[in-house]
Image (tube, rainbow, N blue to C red):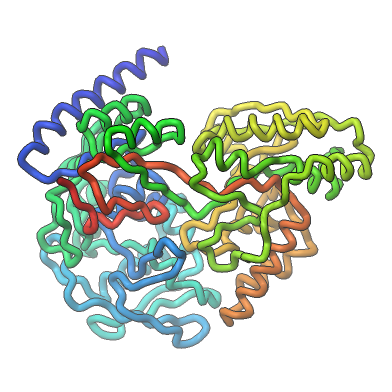
Length: 502
């Protein structure tokens, strides 16, 4: 049955590729193949994760833009200032129109904020990530005040995912129909959505005018099929390339773009909630970190294109502490700590993973091999992705350890991870009363220098207490055809106006 589904998926993708090749002969159409389409289509508030963000950033824009180095730059807003602890004033561009010809103005921004703070689906990603917003008011045509429920000096960072829709079209069509034919200010507009194909065309009114005529997205679940299509020139962009596929891409003159999602991979250790486990001893947790050869994992399994991690954040995030390096690879010291803790003969532990990240299963298998060398037997169990995620959300932690990302998305704030990995989570896997007051103080702090210092304190505490085995900064790979330049995902976002083909 699985083979049958795979056959028909490949067949649908092949048909889309044939059409893509013929349509692109006389036009500059960028052909992008990936393993799945967003269920919500072009509803910018329903989901702001991958793959949705790949499509959304072709059509929608935020007030700000996050750069590769983690800094914030203007987008639909030209400037901003904090007027008081709960109010930010944004000056907006005065030369932007929506794709239906209506002017972009402060009313559109106020509409977006007030929609997300009003009644609506509780499961909308944007509503959850921006749940601290209180509302917005129009000051003048190109000035808007955004209010927050609590002080949030990082608001400009969040405004990169506050995507703006044309208010009348949203009200007239409603979210479901709007998602099929969205009206916004980005470089592209939607022509059509099909199960295996979506065609976006150049937005002639865009202020960031694209140099390509459109984008054709192709739903091609099979990774080898995407690589073959890229090699043959039938597509221009292939998502989900594995490190072992890089040579196949570069052999035909293609290049590799790296995708960083602002998260660091780790294996979290389940030792609270009354569990009787060796992992309750911090010496054991530090020993596990010393046993793992992170650099070998980075070099062999990640193509040498990321870095080892030693704190629950990534380098580009506000609050990352550059003074904290990864744990060194020191098996002898690991054995000594285990012996000191009373486990000279080692012990057995279980690990659950969905294997969803780049080479995810191979990484945990490599960790298991390293741990075995110091006497720790880690039994790896792979769980279906949906089951894995549902269990985590609901606080069902069955194994001794499981894979997790220390996430900084969507703001690249190092403190973002605490929403899932501290007492802030409704059913936490790790809750340390010693650091929680500092976490809450860091969230509330309005002085940037003090906020940075508090975040560094949180980073140091997590590194020292080692509630998980730190691994590496998360990364994915995108293959590009020889004719494609300027395609650089920035934490999922793609600036389609910078893309060139030919």
